[in-house]
Image 1 (cartoon, rainbow, N blue to C red):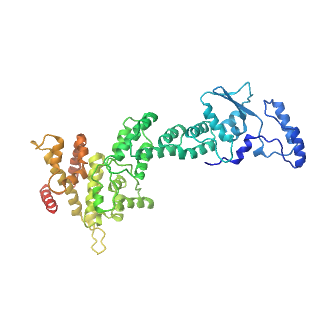
Image 2 (tube, one colour):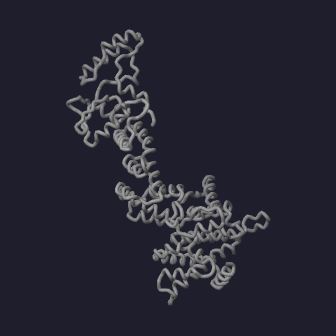
Length: 499
């Protein structure tokens, strides 16, 4: 445990002698005759005592305490303590004691909202029984100290309590104490820990936490854990908590629902081409953007953006895109990433899949997505570099082919699902049948729409995302990004032959 400040020991023991320029001998002799007992002083007696002490020499203000006591009554128990620590360490008490005189018996301070145990714990900090260890040891004791220190504006004691509780309080306890005592760092820390824990909230935790926090935690856990094989990263959870749980929220009732659906596509981090594709095969609800691009972007923003590209975190890359920074986005995307220099086309397939999936889950993104693809196609079309050091291996045709292939696979599934006389009336069987065709059809479909197991349990999500993708595809066709219908069949046949 931390050791209390040794200077506090002087508070608990009033000095009976003093030293002065007149010499120690004189101070001792006079001191023994003017020793001032603690008592209920009148103003005249206090002034007389001060005058006698002045004959000993000048004051050392830091260690010259008044003998004025405070009397508290807590649950029928009486406390009589020095007023000096209260006025010295609390501006609230300093003002209170400066403006109102108190007497021991006639005007005690009655504390009705404090228990004896809480008062004992708090006073043990001001009057420690040991100079090598604090008397308080348990969570309840330090929680009481934090509460009273916050309420009474003892900032030093408050900081001490926060330090001590950091090691002994659980995430739930930190969340509760953080709310009650305005410890903002604990609120964030506790929310991240509760979202990261492998098990849901326990019955005890549910009984302890307020309903608002329960709702926030459960909503965040559902968004962050859904369809993941392992726990989300602490960085991702921290970003989500900062953006949606601790960020400024409107008072509108639909705020929580809108923030959960604002970013509905995300992927896990990956380092290889295959992993980059696999990372997008499930509709992971995404956290807020992990970086941004100003116009013009700063060096730090470009470094953060390059890191997303290096990790093949294409949902994170797309979360940076806005209508105002689309040109800066394209410049950074083309110059810092490897999507357009990947001869195999694996990264291009993963990126375009993430693009379509974002439109499936977030229809407001569709117009922006169409604008992005059109601008990228124009850049590739105008690229005239032909040297061995040519940066862009991908041509405009390859970009259009990648998107058209995704659209062709979607159309194959929809044709089976929307057939007038389906092979199976049951939705689950029909979807499994539609995605079981030769070739990597199911992977492509799940990449764009979502995991089949999820869609089977949430048929409304299948319908909504499919409708959004139809709108997205139609918009891409309008700007000549998608290949014509007669080309789709050859693309499908080519894919099946390669599989």
